[in-house]
Amino acid sequence: MTNSALIRPAWTPATIALMVIGFMVFWPLGLAMLAYILWGDRLDGFKRDVNKATDGMFANCRRGHFRGHARTGNVAFDDWRAKELERIEEERRKLDEMREQFDDYLRELRRAKDQDEFDRFMAERSKSTPATTSKKKKDGKGEGLLDD
Image (cartoon, one colour):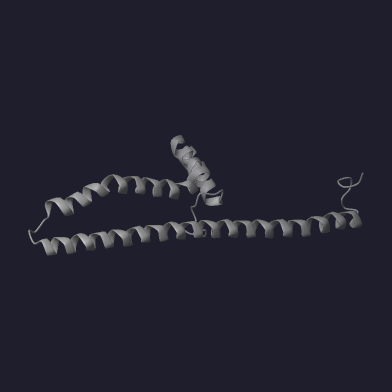
């Protein structure tokens, strides 16, 4: 999921509209959309934690299946297969670590992009605010709004 996604866990016009429509159609849908807006960014971490837990629970079952039941009787082949399976398991662990590092990198990139957009907004806001107030005072159209 990228930051340009239409429906992402943030206060975007699309998510607000879906939340309002959800409340109008069936209130639990609107409540679910509100929960997604507020806590949807935590779903990736939750999903990753659940995957780790289930991988840990079933890892012993997989190992037992390959080592215990599928023996061929050829000791050399069984030893080679056991080493290959260990090597593949190590590669899988490395790939999982790289995936976690990449997820962290993307999360930091999104945070930096959000910070940049916010800083740009604040800079534009601070540029436009003094210009409009001084213009109103000069034009005399502010009529009591800014005059003390």
